[in-house]
Length: 173
Image (cartoon, rainbow, N blue to C red; front, top):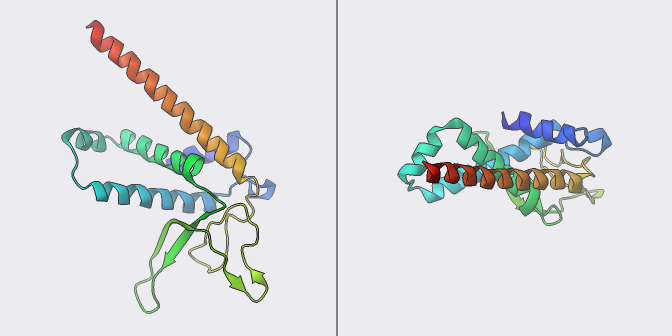
């Protein structure tokens, strides 16, 4: 469901087509995977949930909303594409093949022809093919970030208004 919502956001801003500098589906899914991994790691670090947190976590809609907000906050506001990349941690040779997507430092991998990522506006490391930047065609990434940041701000504003309305109703009863 999160990927569908995010694809709709990109389409609404004409940013979902990599041929016109937008963000492609594969890159978006890898970015979403990194965001989900980050959110889950943060939850595990907290380990102790309050009773209220457990009630909220039981509601899939609330959980999905929180994960969406985490994604929008990460890529709309916090992610610095000049310094960071979405990278895959590959398993060591001979071990069980696993890939873990996460946010890491932007690096400049060298090949015989020089820097394989060049001046790409976005680096999204392909976990299936070393050296393939699936975000390389997204030269309109600043616009993608702006769309995510705007939606994040709009949803936060809506949440604040909704809580105020709920508080007013509770006070009037």
